[in-house]
Image (cartoon, rainbow, N blue to C red; front, side, top):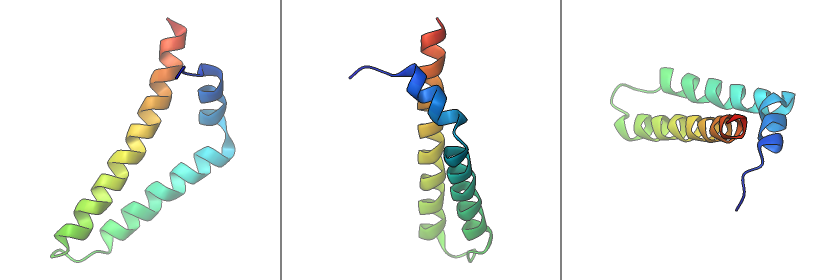
Amino acid sequence: MTDDPIGAIELMKSAAFKKAVSQVEADIMSEWKHSRVTAHVKREKLWMQLTALEAVKAKLQSIIDSAKL
């Protein structure tokens, strides 16, 4: 599998991608803020979702940065 830096750049700049990521982050944070203190499992799942979303963004940025070298 080869990385596609042009595709990664286009995706990261895409209004639809930015809106989707922003909305998913906002939904996760809202759900976390409104969860019960005792909802440890739910909070853990929300943290994992947020971490996974950050990993996707970091991987795309890595593809872009690698192409600049």
